[in-house]
Length: 101
Image 1 (cartoon, rainbow, N blue to C red):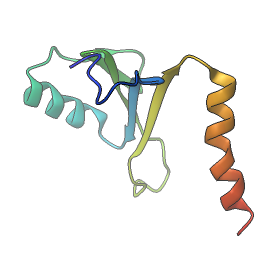
Image 2: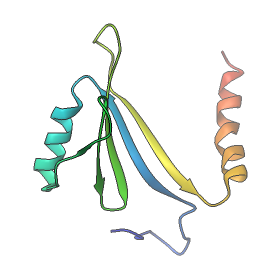
Image 3: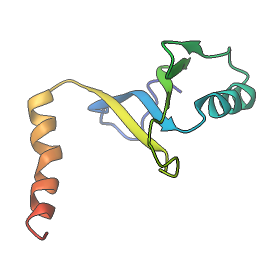
Image 4: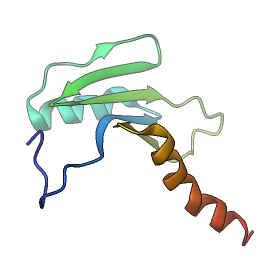
């Protein structure tokens, strides 16, 4: 499905990586391997596993939260052509919302 888009416009960004931080990254990595018949993830240090899923890197980080009750965190990494323009568009809503705090 790489390169598939709806309509005439080309996408201005592509999803490059999804990073998931949780208490048991090995279990979630194993789930995705079995679900999509993937090769086992590679170890990139004591707290990180990763694998390629089509054109997207899928990474699993071990959470170092002291409480152990923290919900999983997810990061999405995008590749964009015009970083300055993207930054201005992404920061505007955040600045607007922060005025109401």
